[in-house]
Length: 157
Image (tube, rainbow, N blue to C red; front, top):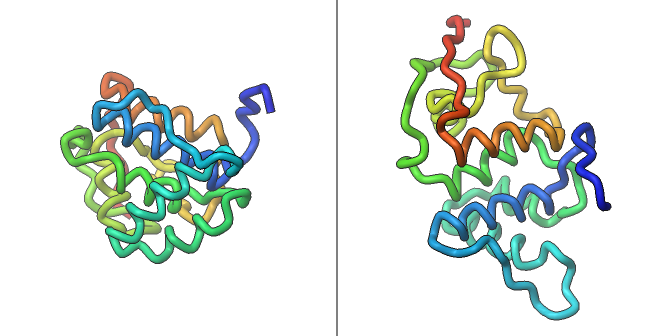
């Protein structure tokens, strides 16, 4: 593929590679990942994702990493991001304490930091929905450039 295809669904392999590159850069690297010779382009990223998910006890993420060509859900994407983005990058700018469809504390931190705003006027997360590449690009931009974060208020459900 040689085009961005913003409306396409992001795969587990693409999302894991993005998360692994962000992790590498945050730890002083250049974002380049090592891959075993002859392995798929995403093998190094999947190995990093598996190591992080194992250490965090995230069986749900370990399971999805076994299917790199499958579409990734919003919950899986932010599950991966929560493993690589430290609290120092999630400074709260919004007072969001309750969401209509998730009580996941890690997801809530992304809302509080202005990275997530929800998929409707109530701030619904819709974690089981797949993630479009365009949406992943916006959210990733907000992770790495705090000036792009959204300050908003979400009504209490």
